[in-house]
Length: 339
Image 1 (spheres, rainbow, N blue to C red):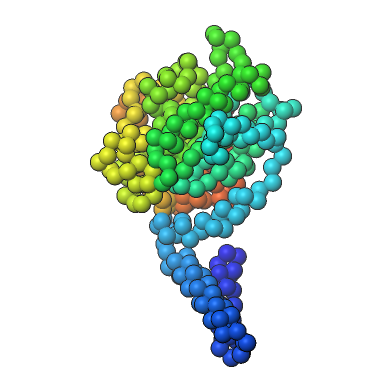
Image 2: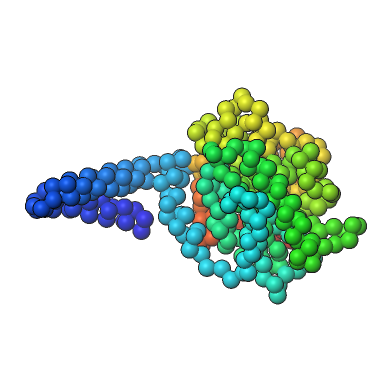
């Protein structure tokens, strides 16, 4: 339907241009303006349609050409969970959306802190409402964290927001949801993220100094999971988006923004990674490098590769189209129940 719509725009623009050439408008300025507008729309639609048709699955162009319709679907998913907005700073992007079903909330289940994707430059928590609603139905309290965006803000700013966001969620969970446990049995947490959000959430989990500074007990972290993860920046294309987030590859900020660099023998919490074999934005090789690092320290992990699936199909397209659900929900549920 998306490509049919683009083709229709191209045809309508051509028709409009022909009509404008044949009719006489009283205002020459109006005629010229309409002609230029039609030409611009034709160029945009034709270019986008061409990219969508000629790009190969597994390429960045293939992924990007499908973003508009993908984002439209994500923003139009109906959910039933209660949603509460919690601020953790003065900036308009410094907030958390908490999704719960009050009658189903299970104090024995871990709370979940999840970070949205969007190439560090776009996105909101609402694009993961489906996942959060699904998890909330199973008794979890799910905190979706927004954050300031690149390139106006860099990796240090974004990761500061994630730390503050988690601290706020942690305190809220204790103070407002009666989920507090005794000091001998503290409330457990699962942390995760999609795409760029998996990068930010992984840095929260694997940077031991940072984790110890924001959280009183290592044992609070029950597990981590990544959807279409960005876990080794060295395997991601050196492009303007990555540079806007963390600078050039040889910069200290780049190195400090790469989760792979923080993995060590103390990281014994289990992780789940779900990734598509045809990911055009975060190649599967970036995940294989990360799991090889885990293997080097004999650390636990589960890797589920979705055959022939793209970045968007693997991480969030299954929220609204069941044909892209290749077992992602079952894998997540099985992993959660095994913790």
